[in-house]
Length: 161
Image (cartoon, rainbow, N blue to C red; front, side, top):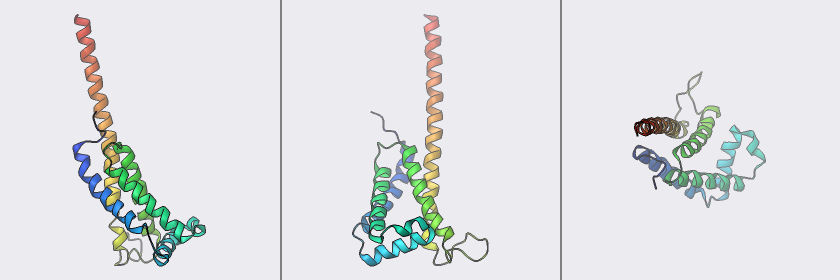
């Protein structure tokens, strides 16, 4: 059975998957203070989270990170699925960065302040997610072209017979 990933997709999936999985495992047993800090930061940017209790939010975030990390590490998960999950997750993190006051330098800058640097660096995950999605699309087109060529060759052989 052929896996739905290529050799070039393995390194970025391992790097991001291990990083996110570790982050999720670290939050699994978050104490009240940590849960409140995570919740406060996220709810300040995404107001719909204000009604979610901090402990519930921390557990859901941990579960989501563990799930996304495991999904990226699993070689049987198609690249498009892994790329979409990573792109969505990292997009949410960058939303925190761009919408939280004090994370970017004054004006219309997207350059990080010292406070914003720990989150701004997560742009690499967005790049990898988009790269995986692109690879999945390009790979699908290449496979379709190969299949089409094989079909034409088979049809020519059949006509000669």
